Length: 419
Ligand SMILES: NC(=O)c1ccc[n+]([C@@H]2O[C@H](COP(=O)([O-])OP(=O)(O)OC[C@H]3O[C@@H](n4cnc5c(N)ncnc54)[C@H](O)[C@@H]3O)[C@@H](O)[C@H]2O)c1
Ligand SMILES: O=P(O)(O)OC[C@@H](O)[C@@H](O)[C@H](O)[C@H](O)CO
Image (tube, protein in one colour):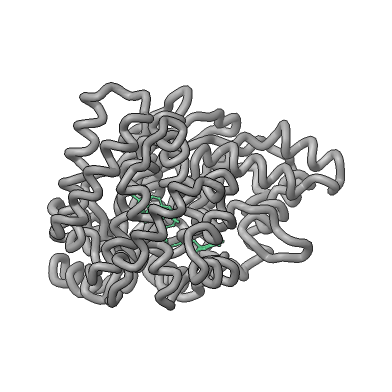
């Protein structure tokens, strides 16, 4: 049996940029709680995923480990990034009021002249909207970027600077940008996941998604053109996401990056496997003690968050590959690890877990198979040592002799056979 729709999909009133596993486990699930809103979802690179999804009427199976398999129907149609005219007309459509994005941390930068990137496409789409109805719209970045709303505003502002002044003024005043904290561990789908969904449901879904029961979505911002009732599915609207963003990026994502680099160096391949390694689990606890000192949240709330993370990281049914998390370290380490390290050095401390993750990352950069937009400068820098790597990221830390010596002293022990 294949998935197919019996009724018309919801009218498209939201657009998504960066259709991947996470969007389908998170924002698309919340949108499904409001049947008035359908999504036109665009991938950037893959042409297969939209074709597979459209062959299923946009439907897909969401396997929530330990709970059940649901069919999610909020994606009314899916498109490859190459469908430029469609993208422009969707962005220009006055009934479209929301654009969500999951385009990875690396995408939040100003495009070079003539470059085709997530931001250049967004600018093209907004220009089409400006020329059409100029109806209000809200952009909702859902990437693991600190203050993702301000980050998107800043790259957008720089990308339209020097263009038609009326358009730039409309982007500033007529385009709202929300800030969000997003959380739901969603690894890339594997062939085993496809088989598991088939065995559980009898349905042949070529593109299911597997995720955990936990989900969090905090949003701050204005929606002048309206929005789906995401709160029906548990989203929370708050005045500011700042403290929660730091809590999530430092405790969850920081620990993930630690486990990824130190874990690969110790021959582990998934988060669960790495958490079974007492040395790595000890480093994670040490990292959490360190980062928690700089989070202005009640101790009981942080303890509860840490307990939940221990459970989530150790969940046997979620196979989160360390290699997937290790991608793009140059975009992740500066937001997950370095802000805490700065504060610790300011207090005169040298936190062992931060030193360990930086040493392990340097070993990883030396080890080959590095996927990172800055690999051309970081791989040679890693061969020179910690100072060269930190110089590329953070001049203050690069001039900290005690820190540099500590990291360099750790690097050899972090090198191992990565699986
Ligand atoms: N997977 C998770 O557990 C999770 C949880 C919270 C937040 N996120 C955020 O969502 C992002 C995507 O995660 P995913 O699991 O869906 O990944 P994915 O690989 O399944 O999908 C990523 C999507 O973004 C596009 N993309 C990748 N690099 C891009 C670039 N440089 N510019 C524009 N588009 C690009 C891809 O074409 C694809 O459509 C993450 O980078 C992270 O910021 C993921
Ligand atoms: O998705 P990335 O590449 O930004 O980071 C990898 C993981 O740390 C991340 O996906 C977490 O699982 C997620 O942020 C949990 O909500």
